[in-house]
Length: 568
Ligand code: SRM
Ligand code: SF4
Image (tube, rainbow, N blue to C red; front, side):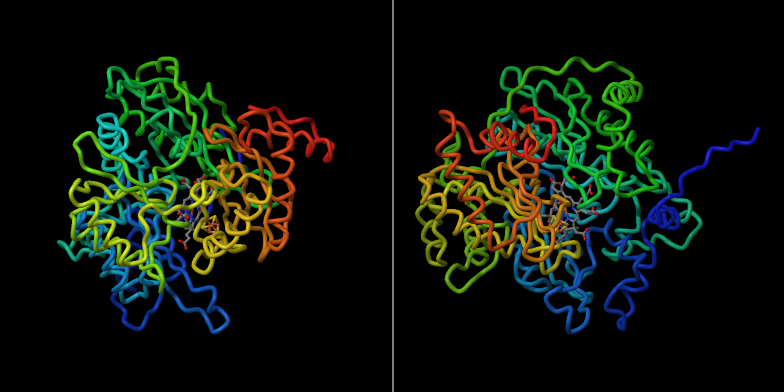
């Protein structure tokens, strides 16, 4: 019988992946060609799976496209040994733009690498036992955890599980080693290479990127509900007994396309700790098999859940696991927030939590942060633990070296006490211009100065000591997870932002549009009038985000003739 059902046309990326299942494309050939300063469009897609984006400096576009590369390092839980950090610092100086960018998924990015430095950078990263494989692309990305060092044994167990998943879910392609590491020649042109099939990802990998994170209640510093798959640690007797599984979260949306939206992950159920790897394989398998391969704007796991429902998803998962999930165990999230300043560990050593504004580690004339960090890490043998809010912890400072660490930092203009305001300390901005090809407006370069004016407005309205979580992105893709913030500014066009309000510190509620367009010059006045109302009308101990959801959402709905919003 003839099947008349029309199969949707696959997106071009699907055919491309199928054409080179090792993900090799013709990267090696272009890499070896000294005349080529960039890769073909097809190879630029393969390059992402190897952890690099082909970009151009958008500030210089008028002078003609100058190709540069972003390289992203994958490091589960954001934990770096001293020698690893020092090596990354040197690579940034030798081949990048002399800065390191701490990412919102506990990675490190290099920017501004030219083609001749690309292989050397990737090799240098691998020489210190780190990788860039699957830092980008239609695969499972860097696995995020709360900084493990803040959570004792539970933190260690969670990090072990994150590392287990990171390794187990890594693509098996031999191409990465052959192309970048000059290892044994693996005959990429051979029939075997053409027929290569990854045990998890098959020949065409996932329909889209896939994000996994762990969380340790009551702190939701990872934004667990913004993840494709989240594991919320449940403790018994000071150890992890298992995890509540959440699935189907995500941030990305496009302006004017209502088929795309941010979504909070659903709570699926509880699994024992031993089932974490099988669960991750099963959920990734569901995305692989049911994700939309025709429309990349609708291809994330969140749309599978939105379209098919949580009951369908749980059934699929249980079928693949061969056992039923227990009901989710009780847990509560109360806050986000990174540790700043000194904290002594049970073994007597110290941690220093440092605010890294918009995640950028670089030297300026007055504040030589990059040099200072390298020196203290090298001299005192400190680990560096990155946080999911683009900050870092210096770990393992001996009690008798605290003063020395302080001195070396101070010599470079870096104050370890770093008295930043609560609102600045809670802020985040994505990379945006000049490197991000998708940026519609500034973010990283603009937020620090904007925060100064926001601080003034808060001072003038009597809110100088309040913490309000403010996030800015250069486009609606959501790389700084703006839709979880109490206030978000999302780029629409140069100098224009969409204003969102109403997220909460527990990271359990999406914010909503308050104003569709605010000019960059009007942001502070707009926020100041909201701050004034907040101070006048707030309930006792009410956070700005909760006030916005209680008062501003309802007003906005009335103005727009919408049904009143439900808070929760
Ligand atoms: Fe992102 C694309 C930077 C975390 C959602 N993201 C990009 C690209 C690669 C632009 C591009 O495709 O050409 C950006 C590179 C800019 C540059 O010059 O460096 C970029 N994303 C980043 C980083 C560096 C932002 C940061 O300020 O730290 C983060 C790297 C994390 C890492 O180490 O792996 C980063 N991106 C995120 C997050 C947050 C998270 O995962 O917790 C999100 C929202 C969560 C989610 O995935 O839903 C995010 N990025 C996106 C999207 C929207 C995807 C979608 O579902 O529509 C894009 C666009 C795309 O994929 O087509 C994107
Ligand atoms: Fe680029 Fe948009 Fe992500 Fe910002 S949110 S880094 S502008 S893709």
